[in-house]
Structures are given as structure tokens and as C-alpha cells.
Image 1 (tube, one colour):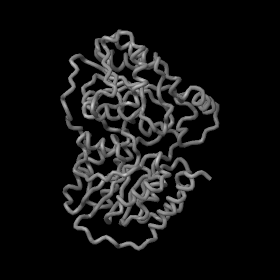
Image 2 (cartoon, helix red, strand yellow):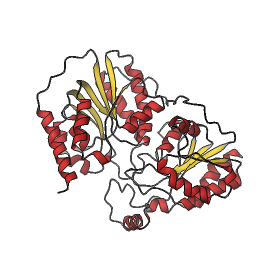
Image 3 (cartoon, helix red, strand yellow):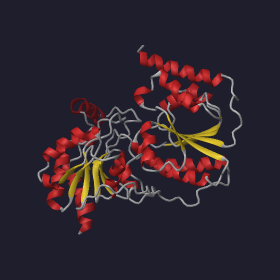
Image 4 (cartoon, one colour):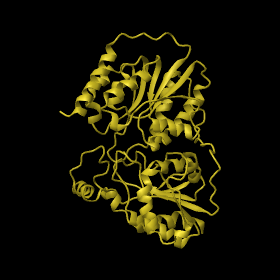
Length: 414
């Protein structure tokens, strides 16, 4: 057994030990504390939860005896602070990163940060991992609200003991369908409404509107109309093989430059530097390209996204951020979690839905949730080993992407 496996067992045992230790050590607080778990470390996950955080804080402000806390990773906390969207909720930085989930010392440190008060409720707008269940079973709390996918039994059975030790569970069951997952925005909205009823049957969101991220800075001004391209993806992601071919990005970039008067801005972090550099070298009209990769602060990057004519890129967090900023976006989309983030279904009410560019649905769709044995999945596995890319992404041609830009941007401009 590896050291990582041993540590994971030790983490579960420690969580169970904390659960059975004597409780009632916290004095009665003048506030009723609510802990919001933002477990997933991706920017896209945080972006999609901003609306429910906004409405939750707005409703609870009228309940003066309640105090809200967010437990999130450093990336999540920094993101909310940088876009000035903490909504006066106190942030508690914990390490939810996947690479440290077998680190026993970090697990204990996370527990100490959270085990400082009694929570009348713990709420997660998403599924809870075994790691987080082990973390919170030893906390003092009154009730817990979270969602749980139903299309696969592995999530329901692998942490059976931890589920038994969670008390006063209010569970929102989602995703029974094996054809299309429920979009995250709809799940989050349902959980918010359910949670408010748990707190007080008379609490509800009077008018559910899309939150507007405030203008952050005005230091970067690009004189010409421009669009944004980014060929990279966030590192450490669950789905690392979703990055489209650079040559295809270049074909789209050259089409845009030849058929519009737009300037192209390349944006991204250090993680995107290599991909964007390769893309820049393949673009013909370099005099109409501005490479801002690693050259903007986070706030400046947000404003560059906000003021673009459109954004074109891989399935990554900035696509959802563009949607929240009311910026048109084109996204190279696959099927590993079809419906969960993309596409935005008709009943998702946002001002700027991303425009999906994808192939016909393969038989191996939802491969992250369902174990497939079809020939399409076999071919995809071979493609990942050989070329480091999912087949449903690689099968998207440059011509398909160009046609989408022609239809939904050039055609609409007349």
C-alpha cells in the first residue's frame, strides 16, 4: 500500500475520532453561524456559484442574527476578493487542492481552521467529497445541506460510513439521467431555495437576477475593437486532455484577421504561456495581435474580458466568467460531463450563454460518470495515450469553429 493510500485511511480515521470526541465546547454565540463549503478549486466552479452567494447574502442580511462564512481554497478566496464579490462574507482559507488530499498535516490544519465555532448549518452547493465529509463530521453543527449525483453508485457507496456519521442531512439528489446532466447553475439555485426554507419557511429570493461584477480597474485600454483567444487550460484540472490543437486555433485566428477588422488579444497566466506563444508564432498578421499573456493583473484581465467583442477558447473557467461579464464566447466543448457546465440549457437564465462548438454526441458521452465499453471510448483512450487529447475534442475541426464565428459574430454584424 502506498504512503498516499495509508494517509487517506488515516485521514478518515482521524475524522471519525473527532466525531466521537466530546462536543459542546463552544459557548453560545450571539450570531447563528452558517458555513458555506466551496470545495472545488477551479475558477469556473467559483464563477458559477457567485450568483447564489450574492442572493444568499442579500436575503440573510435581513436576518441580523446570522453570520456567513466561506471555506474555500486560496484560489477561490483570492478570486472572490479580486473581483470585489465577497458580499461581506468572512473567508476562511483552507486547502482543498487535489494534490494535498493525502497530506495528513494539511488535513489537521484545515480542521483547526474550521473547528472554531458552532455552525447552525453547513451548506455546499455541490457534491461533498469523502475528504470533506471526513473534515466536517467532527465539527459542531446543527444541520447540513448538499447535493449528490445519482447516475453512478460509486459516489453513494465508497464513503458509506462517513455519510452515516453526518447528522441532520438535507440532501438534494440530482442527475438521474444518463443522457444529460443538470446544469450547475440550476442545481445551485435549487439548493439555495431549499436551504432558505430550512432556515425559515418564509425566506425566499424575491427576484432572482444575474449578479454584475463591479468594474475593477481602468488601467488597460485597447483602442481598437478586439477579440480574445487563449489556447491554454488551467493546470491540475480533472480533465487535462481537453486542450484543442494549436494549429486549429491558428486557423481560426488567421480567419478572424482576414475577415474582420478586429485585433486579437492573447490572454492567460503562466500556465498558458507555452500554448499562447506557439499560437502567436503561427499567426500571420502579427501587427494586429497583442500578447497580454502574464502581463495583466487579475483585475485587468477581468476588464479585458469584459470589453472584448468575444472570447474564443477551450472549456475553462474564463468562458463562464465571460458569460457573467455579458461577453459573447465561443468554446471548444466535449462530452465528459455533458450538461454539467456546457451547454447552458434553455432554462438557464443568463445574459450571454457560451456558444458551444462540438461534434455530434458520441456513445461514450458522460465518460466521467459512466463506465463505457463501446468502440468510441476505446478509440478515445488510445487518442489520450498517443496524443494527449480527448477524441471528442480532437474531432472538432477548424472549419466547424470558423463556421460558428461566421454565423454568430460576422453574420450578426452584417
